[in-house]
Length: 149
Image 1 (spheres, helix red, strand yellow):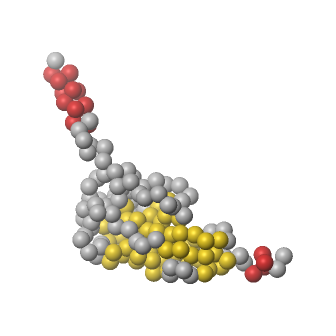
Image 2 (cartoon, rainbow, N blue to C red):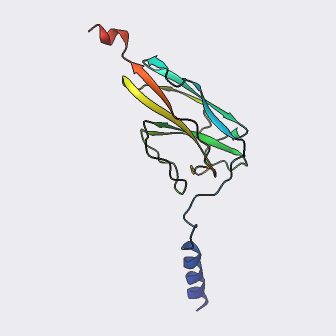
Image 3 (cartoon, rainbow, N blue to C red):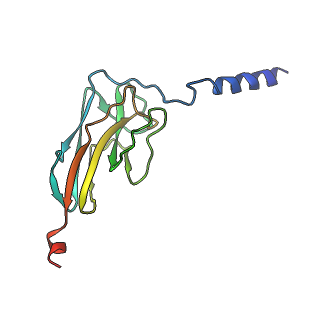
């Protein structure tokens, strides 16, 4: 009977509102996430460097659960807002930098693209409140050799 009671209690706790929600990691009140490069409206050609800036919080590896620290996620052409109750997705539009990287070489097809940074906690959840950069727009130009063909 005790086993059934314990199992019922565990199930009830698991179903409590908020149990499936975000980790609730709080962000530093003055945290700021931003792009060092490229700049909003910049025109680039071919592969280009994207450098991430973060103020008043630290950068660490995914899985490292330190206070006021997280890792970067780069959103490419994402229009939907991030759900703070879910881990940040991982796909070609949601790039994870769980090794603590603060820059990447990005190669996008010619055209207009949007970029935005989101800081995730040890388990890839956004912080509360979310630490996100402004969304920037860049224009990738075709390589010179591609235009002359």
